Amino acid sequence: MKTLDAPVLHRLLEPLVQILTPDVARKLVGYRFDAKAQAHIDKLARKCNQGRISDQERREYETYVQTIDFIAILQAKARACLKRSTDS
Image 1 (spheres, rainbow, N blue to C red):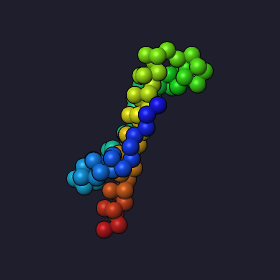
Image 2: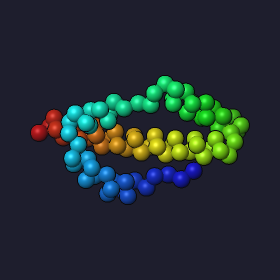
Image 3: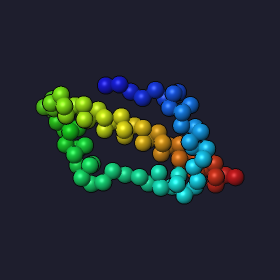
């Protein structure tokens, strides 16, 4: 599975983070998948761990994992933005 290139993401996302308002940053930090999407991800994860996942399901699961990683990076940057705004 490919992983996200952290230095590239940092370089591309940092300008975006600079324009986040505290309200948007809080919403981003609180973002979660809906229950239906999370249940589907959990099902794919179980199938993957059990070695019973089809090629199509694997591609879908890998997309979810990469998306989750990307969102986690955005959320970490939003938390840092909120911390900076409260430290000022």
